[in-house]
Image (cartoon, rainbow, N blue to C red; front, side):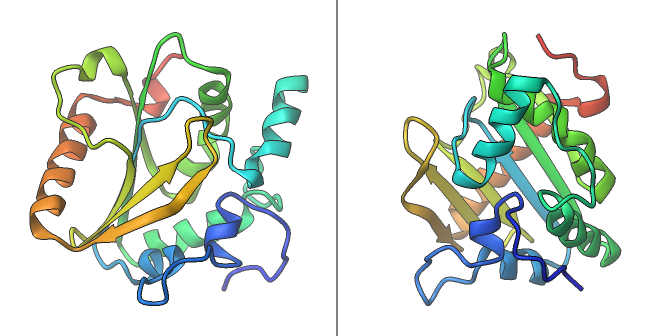
Length: 197
Protein backbone atom coordinates (compact mmCIF):
# COMPACT_ATOMS: atom_id res chain seq x y z
CA UNK A 1 0.00 0.00 0.00
CA UNK A 2 1.29 3.45 -0.89
CA UNK A 3 1.22 6.28 1.66
CA UNK A 4 -1.70 8.68 1.40
CA UNK A 5 0.33 11.73 2.43
CA UNK A 6 0.09 14.21 -0.47
CA UNK A 7 3.51 15.75 0.23
CA UNK A 8 5.92 16.10 -2.69
CA UNK A 9 8.20 13.18 -3.45
CA UNK A 10 10.41 12.43 -6.39
CA UNK A 11 8.39 12.33 -9.60
CA UNK A 12 5.30 13.32 -7.58
CA UNK A 13 3.63 15.11 -10.46
CA UNK A 14 4.01 11.99 -12.59
CA UNK A 15 3.13 9.27 -10.15
CA UNK A 16 0.79 10.65 -7.54
CA UNK A 17 -1.24 13.40 -9.17
CA UNK A 18 -0.78 12.04 -12.68
CA UNK A 19 1.08 14.17 -15.21
CA UNK A 20 -1.23 15.31 -18.02
CA UNK A 21 -0.74 12.45 -20.46
CA UNK A 22 -2.94 11.46 -23.40
CA UNK A 23 -5.89 9.39 -22.20
CA UNK A 24 -4.78 6.49 -24.38
CA UNK A 25 -1.36 6.39 -22.67
CA UNK A 26 -0.93 4.45 -19.43
CA UNK A 27 0.40 6.52 -16.55
CA UNK A 28 4.00 6.23 -15.43
CA UNK A 29 2.82 4.60 -12.23
CA UNK A 30 0.68 2.09 -14.16
CA UNK A 31 3.70 1.13 -16.29
CA UNK A 32 5.76 0.49 -13.16
CA UNK A 33 3.01 -1.37 -11.30
CA UNK A 34 2.20 -3.67 -14.23
CA UNK A 35 5.81 -4.57 -15.13
CA UNK A 36 6.37 -8.31 -14.76
CA UNK A 37 10.09 -8.82 -15.45
CA UNK A 38 12.23 -5.71 -15.76
CA UNK A 39 12.32 -1.94 -15.70
CA UNK A 40 15.35 -0.02 -16.94
CA UNK A 41 16.03 3.70 -16.87
CA UNK A 42 18.70 5.49 -18.91
CA UNK A 43 19.54 9.03 -17.74
CA UNK A 44 21.88 11.16 -19.82
CA UNK A 45 21.41 14.76 -18.67
CA UNK A 46 23.76 16.62 -16.35
CA UNK A 47 21.05 18.81 -14.87
CA UNK A 48 17.34 18.54 -14.18
CA UNK A 49 15.22 21.36 -12.78
CA UNK A 50 11.89 19.63 -12.27
CA UNK A 51 9.62 21.37 -9.79
CA UNK A 52 9.43 18.62 -7.17
CA UNK A 53 13.22 18.59 -6.69
CA UNK A 54 14.04 22.29 -6.63
CA UNK A 55 13.54 22.87 -2.90
CA UNK A 56 15.55 19.79 -1.91
CA UNK A 57 18.31 20.63 -4.40
CA UNK A 58 18.59 24.21 -3.13
CA UNK A 59 18.77 22.96 0.47
CA UNK A 60 21.54 20.53 -0.50
CA UNK A 61 23.49 23.32 -2.24
CA UNK A 62 23.28 25.53 0.87
CA UNK A 63 23.99 22.88 3.52
CA UNK A 64 25.57 19.91 1.76
CA UNK A 65 22.90 17.75 3.40
CA UNK A 66 20.69 15.56 1.22
CA UNK A 67 17.42 14.07 2.36
CA UNK A 68 18.43 10.41 2.36
CA UNK A 69 15.86 8.96 4.74
CA UNK A 70 13.71 6.32 3.02
CA UNK A 71 10.66 7.28 5.11
CA UNK A 72 10.87 11.04 4.52
CA UNK A 73 8.01 12.71 2.63
CA UNK A 74 10.39 13.21 -0.31
CA UNK A 75 11.31 9.52 -0.66
CA UNK A 76 8.65 7.36 1.04
CA UNK A 77 6.36 6.79 -1.91
CA UNK A 78 9.18 6.05 -4.32
CA UNK A 79 10.74 3.62 -1.84
CA UNK A 80 7.43 1.81 -1.36
CA UNK A 81 6.79 1.67 -5.11
CA UNK A 82 10.25 0.29 -5.92
CA UNK A 83 10.10 -2.11 -2.97
CA UNK A 84 6.79 -3.48 -4.25
CA UNK A 85 8.39 -3.96 -7.68
CA UNK A 86 11.26 -5.90 -6.12
CA UNK A 87 8.86 -8.05 -4.04
CA UNK A 88 7.18 -9.09 -7.31
CA UNK A 89 10.55 -10.27 -8.62
CA UNK A 90 10.89 -7.42 -11.12
CA UNK A 91 14.42 -6.00 -11.51
CA UNK A 92 14.86 -2.24 -11.73
CA UNK A 93 18.14 -0.93 -13.18
CA UNK A 94 19.14 2.71 -13.59
CA UNK A 95 22.18 3.79 -15.64
CA UNK A 96 23.44 7.35 -15.62
CA UNK A 97 25.76 8.76 -18.29
CA UNK A 98 27.53 11.83 -16.89
CA UNK A 99 30.14 14.38 -17.85
CA UNK A 100 33.22 14.68 -15.66
CA UNK A 101 33.90 16.77 -13.71
CA UNK A 102 30.27 16.28 -12.68
CA UNK A 103 27.77 19.10 -12.20
CA UNK A 104 26.36 20.07 -8.83
CA UNK A 105 23.14 18.35 -9.81
CA UNK A 106 24.93 15.05 -10.41
CA UNK A 107 26.60 15.38 -7.00
CA UNK A 108 23.13 15.90 -5.54
CA UNK A 109 21.77 12.83 -7.37
CA UNK A 110 24.75 10.79 -6.23
CA UNK A 111 24.13 11.79 -2.60
CA UNK A 112 20.55 10.47 -2.78
CA UNK A 113 21.30 7.24 -4.63
CA UNK A 114 21.73 5.33 -1.38
CA UNK A 115 17.95 5.55 -0.96
CA UNK A 116 17.39 4.11 -4.42
CA UNK A 117 19.66 1.17 -3.54
CA UNK A 118 17.84 0.69 -0.23
CA UNK A 119 14.52 0.51 -2.11
CA UNK A 120 15.85 -2.15 -4.48
CA UNK A 121 17.13 -0.32 -7.54
CA UNK A 122 20.47 -1.22 -9.09
CA UNK A 123 22.36 1.92 -10.14
CA UNK A 124 25.46 2.37 -12.28
CA UNK A 125 27.37 5.40 -13.54
CA UNK A 126 29.20 5.81 -16.84
CA UNK A 127 31.49 8.77 -17.55
CA UNK A 128 30.41 10.22 -20.91
CA UNK A 129 33.91 10.01 -22.39
CA UNK A 130 33.67 6.22 -22.01
CA UNK A 131 30.48 6.17 -24.09
CA UNK A 132 31.79 8.08 -27.11
CA UNK A 133 31.64 5.06 -29.41
CA UNK A 134 28.12 4.07 -28.35
CA UNK A 135 25.03 5.01 -30.34
CA UNK A 136 22.66 6.27 -27.65
CA UNK A 137 19.11 7.68 -27.86
CA UNK A 138 18.82 11.45 -27.84
CA UNK A 139 16.81 11.61 -24.62
CA UNK A 140 16.28 9.83 -21.32
CA UNK A 141 14.07 6.77 -21.34
CA UNK A 142 12.41 4.00 -19.38
CA UNK A 143 11.86 0.50 -20.77
CA UNK A 144 9.18 -1.71 -19.22
CA UNK A 145 9.38 -5.48 -19.85
CA UNK A 146 10.95 -4.86 -23.25
CA UNK A 147 7.42 -4.03 -24.44
CA UNK A 148 7.16 -0.26 -23.85
CA UNK A 149 9.69 2.56 -24.16
CA UNK A 150 8.79 5.82 -22.43
CA UNK A 151 10.96 8.71 -23.61
CA UNK A 152 11.30 11.68 -21.25
CA UNK A 153 11.56 15.09 -22.91
CA UNK A 154 13.16 18.08 -21.18
CA UNK A 155 13.90 21.67 -22.10
CA UNK A 156 17.49 22.87 -22.32
CA UNK A 157 17.43 24.05 -18.70
CA UNK A 158 16.01 20.77 -17.38
CA UNK A 159 12.28 21.54 -17.07
CA UNK A 160 9.72 19.11 -18.42
CA UNK A 161 9.32 19.47 -22.17
CA UNK A 162 6.09 19.78 -24.10
CA UNK A 163 5.14 17.04 -24.47
CA UNK A 164 6.99 15.61 -21.47
CA UNK A 165 6.64 12.01 -22.65
CA UNK A 166 6.48 9.85 -25.70
CA UNK A 167 5.47 6.19 -25.43
CA UNK A 168 6.11 3.56 -28.08
CA UNK A 169 5.76 -0.18 -28.47
CA UNK A 170 7.56 -0.25 -31.82
CA UNK A 171 9.69 -3.41 -31.76
CA UNK A 172 12.57 -1.85 -33.72
CA UNK A 173 12.78 1.15 -31.37
CA UNK A 174 12.56 -1.19 -28.36
CA UNK A 175 15.40 -3.34 -29.66
CA UNK A 176 17.62 -0.31 -30.35
CA UNK A 177 16.94 1.27 -26.97
CA UNK A 178 17.45 -1.94 -25.01
CA UNK A 179 20.69 -2.60 -26.84
CA UNK A 180 21.88 0.93 -26.02
CA UNK A 181 20.99 0.48 -22.36
CA UNK A 182 22.77 -2.88 -22.17
CA UNK A 183 25.93 -1.42 -23.69
CA UNK A 184 25.92 1.40 -21.14
CA UNK A 185 25.17 -1.02 -18.29
CA UNK A 186 28.03 -3.33 -19.27
CA UNK A 187 30.55 -0.46 -19.17
CA UNK A 188 29.13 1.47 -16.25
CA UNK A 189 30.48 1.39 -12.69
CA UNK A 190 28.25 0.17 -9.85
CA UNK A 191 27.27 3.02 -7.55
CA UNK A 192 29.25 1.73 -4.58
CA UNK A 193 32.44 1.77 -6.69
CA UNK A 194 31.91 5.02 -8.61
CA UNK A 195 33.94 7.99 -7.39
CA UNK A 196 32.71 11.46 -8.28
CA UNK A 197 35.22 13.54 -10.21
